[in-house]
Length: 224
Image 1 (cartoon, rainbow, N blue to C red):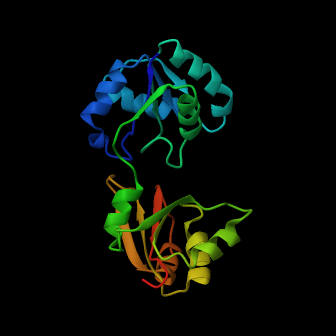
Image 2 (cartoon, rainbow, N blue to C red):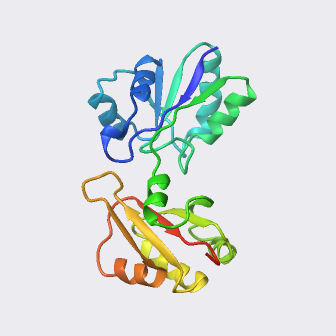
């Protein structure tokens, strides 16, 4: 029986990949990728020539059984996503759970993830925090914001650039305009930016122009 490797990949700067990640990707029999085109650029850059299959949120339910069978038959597999650590707001959890159920060894490598540098860079308390990932887009969104309004730990959220201003405006309403926060985008890339201020100030700042890049919002806890 072989092993499933969960391999983090750079969130922007290719230099952030670990030597061990490269080593594992060169050793396994098969690489599962969220987007084979994006991952193909990474693999080519590091001269990794392995079979690559798609594994994303739209097909993972259908492919898990066959992947588990391949693992049980001796195939070693590495799962990567477009950026960061698999399973963190990305595909990975369902396959890991299925492997554990069947007694297949799962090994997760340490490596890049967007929310840790965004948290540290925010200047907000880091000793206790809660990672929320993406808020519900429609159903349950207002309820979740109401619940988070009393959260005392620092909160970390991912957001699309297209919904950033809406989310900051809704947080201003639910959490109060003076609640502190920060917005990090394009982490590790050439145009990396972190803007800090109150939620009201952040909403006004990002409402003035076009927003690009992957977004991490960090918000001060209630009563901080």
